[in-house]
Amino acid sequence: MPSSTLGTPWSLALLLIAAMTLAVSFGAVPLSAGEVIAVLGGRGDPLHETLLLQLRLPRVLLAAAIGGLLALTGALSQGMFRNPLADPSLIGVTGGASLGGAIVLALGIGAGAGGSLILSFGAFVGGLIATGLVYRIARSAEGTSVSTLLLAGVAITALAGALVSILEMTVDSSTLRQVALWRLGSLAGADYQSLALALGTLALVITLSLPLRQLLNALSLGEAEAGHLGYDTQRSKALLTAIIAGGMGVTVALAGAIAFVGLVVPHMVRLYSGPEHRSLLPRCTLLGALILVLADLLSRTLLAPGEIPLGIVTALLGVPYFLVLLRHYQARMVMT
Image (cartoon, rainbow, N blue to C red; front, top):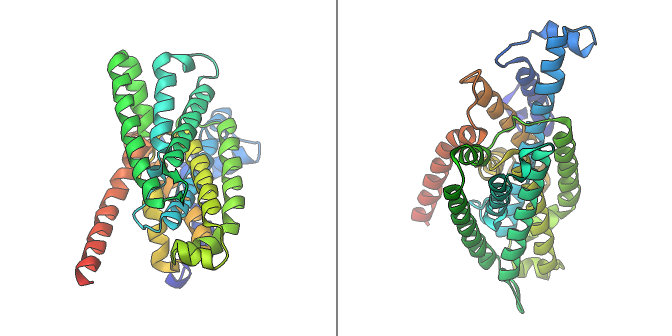
């Protein structure tokens, strides 16, 4: 494939399909192409059928949906904050969701049947409450300040982290391990129910965010300039905050806190497609899906039959890129 076509949506979609095919074939028990085709054709071994259709396929599809959500909300966050180092978790949703999930686990509410659903619901509610609190703090008679929104998000995230730490000190070792592993991120509990929720949320976030492409381009010029172009910036920021909070709340609820995908993927896309949001948003969604499918494949194969928490894998891949990014911006600041 020529290098000039690697960044197009079609090439990213083809790479995503190739990565998903690879991911359903590899694992603690590898499946050959013939065995995968036999299962999909209804002629496979029952063990292979269970492995492929009940375990790997929903997990791979969930990884793609979660990755797409993380990268898309990351691009929206950076556009709203007009800051390339902004992360969707900065509005407090990840911290609040982590606290909500930790409370469910510490109280043992999700220990029985439907536990994962209750855990997801607790995390989602926690994320929404934290984001609502952050937005309420940032709002004044003059409107909503983006910088105050950012600082309030950092403060609420720190407060939620402290409360989670207190909870961890009060539970037994088994629950403590459960909370820690959940917060590190995993797709091990993937099923078609969680997949339907993730795909539905992704479709909703895409539907709501694509019409906002011109607004995000206008916001990149500044809030005053966007207002002069006829945009209601206060209402737009409220809508963007709600979209980001909803999308991130679902990802944390279903997969825990997965770091760096929302931060680094928009930068990777800007390297070859530029900052224009009409091309940025769809490419971010596809590249985020591709990266998380490959990261999840690594998390369950590197130490097979054990697993490395997904948040650790994305951090190991994302931190070097983030440090290079910091050096790049530091060099630009010195030059200016």
